[in-house]
Length: 414
Image 1 (tube, rainbow, N blue to C red):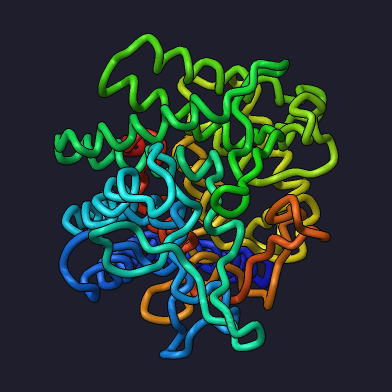
Image 2 (cartoon, rainbow, N blue to C red):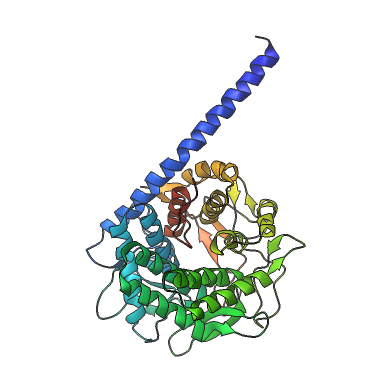
């Protein structure tokens, strides 16, 4: 065998070996993340439960005090959806039960809204426990303003989880809880000024919350999917109308010239932000909305140009590090869009983010930025992800690897 032929054969063998490893990575990711999520629920006392979004790493709590023992609603909604996809219905329903309970047992409001986060752990009477911590510096109890607020996208994701629980169980309480959450969003966040859609929600502490007037493309994607999911299981013209309003807003943010979605509007609710970009807003419409225009698939070229971070993807444009959750989202959307060649190398990238015991780090970097501010009182863009085990990242990886569409509950086509 001459040297050229040997080289060609060598490259073929290496390529074949890499493909085989990539093929093995996906089922490994399913087994690892599903087991981690199921163990996390099973380790809690019986009954409804919410999981900590940033659990201890090797027995050491999060170094960020404000994140200790905090169960973000979005992360837990994802975890419930993921556990159903994993075939772990008992654990999935325990989280869904906690979300349903929260719609009727807020300690301060009686209107069906959900908070962005709650205290992690068992959930029960008389009301939901809000997150917080004792500040030795202030000698007082501290609560994070964002955590006790109610963002629109988080309402929608909770509704999606509750509707998946209804589809899986037929239990009417999940359907009613989802409807209650969505009706709160309809009543309190709809903004009819052009482009009509749903604004960001409410921010701040009880009795002093302020409305967020900006409109997010991602939030409207979430609501379009949630209202459509509600209409699918309980057909109603009003639900279909709300889904259409949210979808039309998303469509209004499509920039055909650049082949991408704008992130949404500024505080005036009308002027689109043409500078920033969020990975989720770019790719979720492809799987969240029914029969999306083929032209929207050009976002794959855009994210490869603007959101690439090493072998994976970052949160914002020109990212400063890999975002594990977003890389899982890209894998999920690519796989569900029939682009398995794009998804395949990402399974190994995700596996490499294991922190311990099946959990994935939010990022392999010490910290990555999003280019976004947590709230209106932020003086800088202070929304970051840290090198910590993360429920959201772990759940998205499980969702992606199992092939479930988290917006509809359907599985990828064979």
